[in-house]
Length: 502
Ligand SMILES: [Zn+2]
Ligand SMILES: [Zn+2]
Image (cartoon, rainbow, N blue to C red; front, side, top):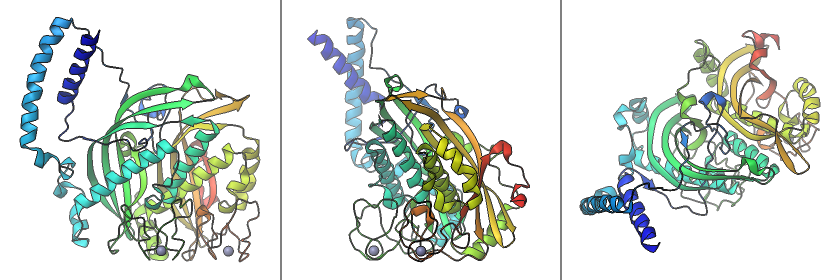
């Protein structure tokens, strides 16, 4: 038996030696469990059957499940193969030793595209001549690992300073649901095969880097309320990470520093929803200091050009007008606000507590949604935002009205007698429209209703049905201060001239 085990051991060693293209693939040690979620995804992505796991964007369609190594050869035949393989491995080791200096520092070599081939590179580099691509890719790498670890730990602390409020809310809602449903989803064996900049876009006063990440990892999903849903497997996937930064800001670092990029004071370990320095009040994730993760999109969603998310031809002009009015306007950032609002409304629904969304929805929408939210008993086993896209902008009676297409993947469940039952047998794709309204002349707020602080005075705001700020008395859901959610409906209820009716 011992020799058989030894043979198998040798065989695994040899195969892994030969099988892993480790010149281009880096194995990252699991620091307390690396994390990102996986599997599943909406039925649109050709769903790999039952799925669980998955962080913000989710739905890795190319998942596979690997069993343990199994060899069906006779011991004699295996031995011959082994000798050949060991010989090849020996040659490979010699070769790698020779080229080890080159292969140990090939992070930049992981780029799939040379910089000249990146869409938008020339315009970007003309405006940012000192941009260091390899330094940026190291930040992405760090972000990737921190996000996976955060997922495993169901805690946003490690990544809070470099993610937008919308990305924070996507994770926050998912973690709340996982805690309600007593689920854990630790990730291990994270391998990043490739990281590359796919394109660079200009968006108002901001630049957006669309970065491709090709990786694989193992994940173990466990649901204490229904062990039939437990799963364990390995998958590889490609997803796109969007990073935003204000154009022309001085270079600072928020990835490898635990100090405020503005005043240098140490940052608190648990920053929470309000992403500000407690010393100088600077907003850390505004894009004024460093690249901020603003979206994670799965490959299928990234390349899909569905009619629902199509931008009408005249949108560019309208966006241009808004940039000149608001100054802080960017499509990515309003889409982020729409994602944030959507996730908080869904949290209110799962918790059947309308006070969780009172501060950022219009009075009319609140009247319409509150009874449904109070009555709801469904919790979301999976809730991923696949895509949130600005599809319309209108001006009406001195208000700007923005319309967004929201595609999500959600599985509803019920919990009774300490057991979870499925309402949807699989993760379902939903298409909804969310509408945000803001006064055409509104200035930049001091705080954000999406972050639990008053846009008028910056004072903290609790989850309450009272929509008057307890410090300055201003109406929290006033369109004079911030974008307020004025409508939410299914795609089927939405018509093109909708905005003119509200
Ligand atoms: Zn500070
Ligand atoms: Zn106030």
